[in-house]
Image 1 (cartoon, rainbow, N blue to C red):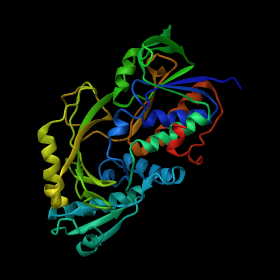
Image 2 (cartoon, one colour):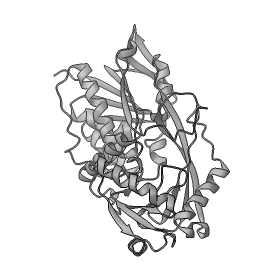
Image 3 (cartoon, rainbow, N blue to C red):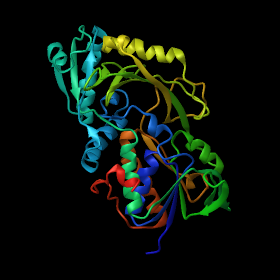
Image 4 (tube, one colour):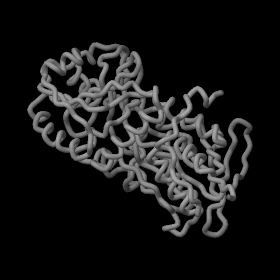
Length: 388
């Protein structure tokens, strides 16, 4: 079989998973990332392996994607997760009322649940608000935000993929209406060059709209930043969620000896200009303390923001982004008259493998290759192998 060359733009979790998937299918793969790999949104999220429960009421498509990929990742990346489960806690009557829709939604999406009394919840997590009324246990887990993608990168490299960090795409090369390559800067050497490929996969997350603009196509992406605050000390051993619709500061994720509270939500035009609003930091304290009162007494470690790549109209002033789905979508831009260019965007860190499968299916279909996806079965190399 002729070896087709696939060029991936973006070295986050999605790009890593696409490189892994296409390399397994026998393609020649090159990936370009303008900074170090995982330097964008991938390296800045909570480190939560979603059960999908967070979306079970209002975004069931995303919920189902999360629970399915949650189980798959545990199988193909053993040892990457602290399988500590999570609690959704109700601390007032409104939360209790929401719990009925929550349990029903989880059942509809295939998410396992266990309803706990106040006493049972406090035995599991003694630092919970003593006013907790009930809790529901779900299969959340935690992970290192960067090490899981590095396992995909390592396995892709073993199968022949070329990973080029510090190579920034600055333009798209076209012949007529077909994208045939990109122009890039090698920042390590200070050189500009062109690289050709049979197909380009845009996996640039919140920057995917900017890459699409270079090709003369439209990607409806909404960069939606959120603030996270890390506190010193481990206030909980399970992931603690508020029993309510997704909102600000409604989750506390234990990470090693830290507790990460998140997150707020707003929208921006430029994912490189996020900012770190002081009132959002305070909001994380205020809302987090409603679940675990010790939040207000725990020393501050760090605060940062990260941009979610949400699918929706690109106008930055419409809303906070809360109403937009967390699902993902693959765009074959031949629908817009441009061949050789595919975008995969949206989604969650939890759904990176599923996103890659969707994109790779489109790629091999366009190239006429009969090569099924194998990423549900292939166990990933350890993250250290990326540097070996």
